[in-house]
Length: 272
Image (tube, rainbow, N blue to C red; front, side, top):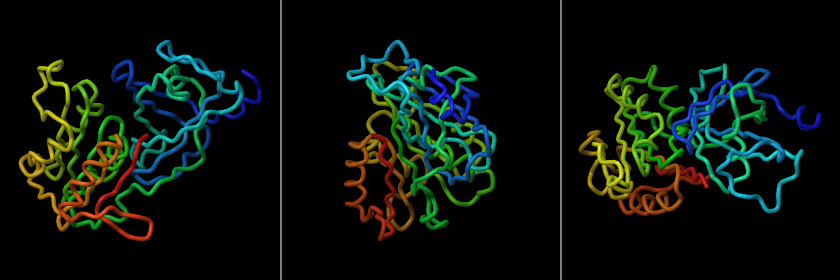
């Protein structure tokens, strides 16, 4: 590794939890003071083109420049009050440039961490009296984990609901933590769901795609939450097709998607 590349690194991996071979939780500690951030925001990670890749990675054509940093933004999963490190929830894209390198990192590996957090996918514009319905597929769960870790420590009145969809139960990262939170906090409900029950027959939660689960009235039945714009703000993060379908469903119920100049009650963060 060249000196030029090494000087771009400003953080170290201090934790790597493998949910399964294509899903990891990565903790990164900056060399200097950690930037301030709001729950729901994202930060940039980077590695050079000559960084090792995992065995499952597809061939690159053309190959990236060896010393040039490949940078991508990832939502932060750690609480904003956690000042020792930032945590990321990442899925492997075998054709991707960066995740195939991030998955090859080990404890102590060096990495680039952007100097600030960005993004407006936060609870700032949500009235405190309304339920926050947090809907995600896959690693789109990450910003909600940050929100819950930060807010549920002191918020006992406002309702939060997480509806998380994945293919299998072993894809439901943070499931144990969220189930524990749901037992400890009466104002929080966790609704996990999977789409391939034929290969995961021991799962006892909701079955089907997110839109079908909403149509079945899961929020009302499991959380006692009425899905209407007067009572709830809805956050959507993950698969663009899910976001498109659920947004249309919500708009038919009177919800409006927020924009830069207009505050809405549908808040969207597309992951790819």
